[in-house]
Image (cartoon, rainbow, N blue to C red):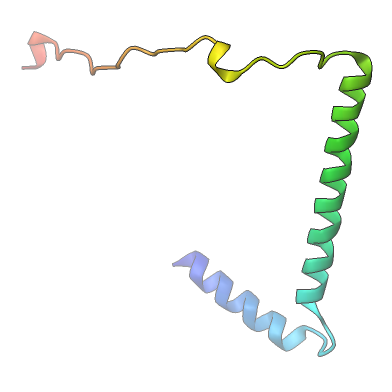
Length: 83
């Protein structure tokens, strides 16, 4: 309930106080585009750097990787004193 009241009052305060020329949709879209562009550039640079250093010389298929099988987990037995 506290969270709902907080959201309501903060939204109301923003509507009352915010300047009428505020373009939040455009600002959010611009920040999102910058973040995606930065992530793509960073990822491209990282892969390029690894290739140039020779770290990525061969790629193994997923079937060649060992299969990790975890045994099923069962709850512990209840002690006889608690029965």
